[in-house]
Every structure is written in C-alpha cells, then in structure tokens.
Amino acid sequence: MPMTHSAAADAVICLASTSPRRRELLTQIGVPHTVVAAQVDESLLPAEVPTDYVVRLARLKATAVRQRGEALPVLAADTTVVLEGSVYGKPSGRADGVDMLVSLAGRTHQVLTAVALATERGVALRVNCSSVRFRNIDRAEIEAYWDTGEPRDKAGGYAIQGYGAAFVAALSGSYSGVMGLPLLETVELLRDAGIRYWIGGAR
Image (cartoon, rainbow, N blue to C red; front, side, top):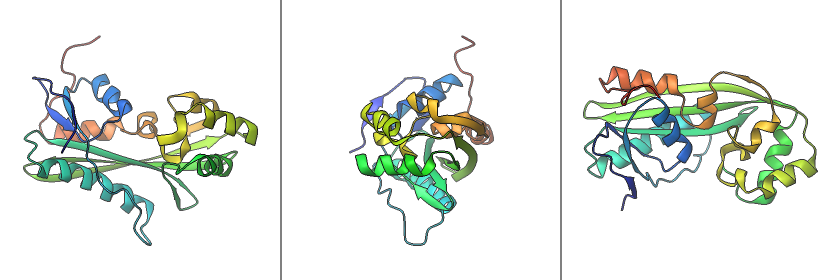
C-alpha cells in the first residue's frame, strides 16, 4: 500500500518520495503536494550506464505511483553519485560508506538527478548533471562523519545540505540537484504540463 504522509487540499502534484529534502525544495518554489512512497527496486541493472539508471528509476517511481490510481500528476526523482563511470548509491553499511568517501576524497565526481512527471499525457523527463569536488579528507574524519548517522541513506554517502558540506571544495551545476531535486528542471516540467508553482505568495 502507498504510504501517504500528507493530503493537502490544495495539492497540485503528488511527490513519489518520502525524502524531506525533496519536500522542502518543492515547498521552496511554492508547490503544494501530497506524498506517496514509490517503493520500487532500485538495483542497478547489469551493464546499465549511470544516466540510464537514474532515468529508469525516476520514470519507474512516477509510473508506479500513478498506476496505483493516483489522480494528481506524479513527480519523482532519482539521484546517484558517479565517479569515473561507477555508480555510488546508498551505502550498504559502515565499511561501504567509509570506502565511498575515501574514494571521493580529493577528487571531482558527478551527481546525476533525473526528474519525471507522470500525467494523463504520459511521462516527461529531465536530467541534471552537476560536478562536486571534495577536499582531501583523512580516514578518521570520514569515520567520524559516518558516526553522525547522516550519510547512511544518501547517494554517495554524504549530504551536501548537512554536515557533508564541510567536504565540498567546489560545486559546478545545481545545488538543489545535488540535494536530490533540481529546481530548474522541475519547474520546466511543471510549466510544460500547465501546473502552477509559486503558490501561496512570497515569504
């Protein structure tokens, strides 16, 4: 069964994600929404390239919720970290999370986020690619970061909007995309579908 976290009477879309970061970003651009967990298998397919992977999952999440009978347009997103062509998803545990950050330290990686909007007209998609360069990080600091609990459910094992910001030496691209919902691409999808944003007035 879908897990509904809110049912705003004025909602214009359903967000197929329980991520509080994606909810905050939608609220930032004035998009009232409901939330339903997509609950899909996020495994990487054999020989699947990173862009195809995030596009497939974003589409799958949006259509899965839509096919359960959701009447509102369904917005979904998927984010992954990519280093030299390898996908760094959510860590499977402490050793995996520490190894990820050891690999990312002192290097530039890409963050891919695909956004999908499923309506009665079909599924529209956008992809954002941003580059993030980490400073050098010693293993003790990486282990201390893991112990904060923050990286455990984050692609690449870090959160740019949280404690993980202390690692970022440079960012080229979309900060919101690295967080998990690129707002430029999201607004493009909403606008093309005739869905309003900036609802509720300026704050």
